[in-house]
Image 1 (cartoon, rainbow, N blue to C red):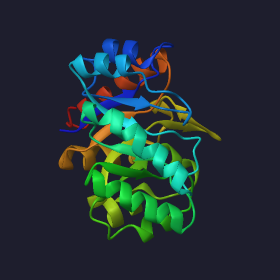
Image 2: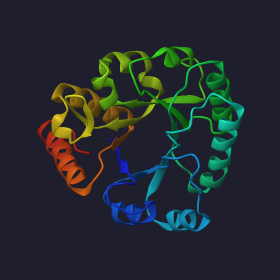
Image 3: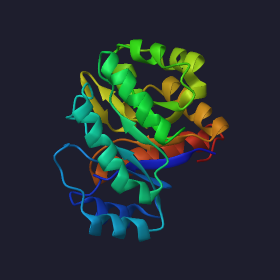
Length: 229
């Protein structure tokens, strides 16, 4: 069976309220930290820690991880968030040797719990990191479809490193749409792999209606294909 997750922005409230309402609906909540300048509230962390749900962390998306200062910020955030025992810290790659050195150092602190996400069609960083055993990959299926990356090809080469999937539909040039906008052959590839290898699928849509509709779509698909979630 795969583990089901969704971001902490299904409800138009904060992370605590989202986690409270989503606990029992999903196995994990993907905690979104969108801005690197955001202060982490110790009270929020304590509330999250007490809820009956697991977490993984999406580290800030607005911070280019190409300098020692940027990585110091990542380490400081992880120091505060580690009490939640996240299944992974997901981050976006940057170009250049500074990113490679920084992510390797970061992963050495949390072996097997740091995942690099594909954000466009450039897969060079994944080739450069494929022999780093401490590092995992987060395959964003919507990004792959949007930029013409073969999901099956990615899994054939790097499936052993993929710990998490971000799953969402693509409608024209718009991603993070409901799952009904995702090709069923792609969905089948992801669900089959995640089920067989017990990976995490985060239904990465934002808003209650898209989440409910996508969850129902996924459940219907699994039932019809005899792959219950």
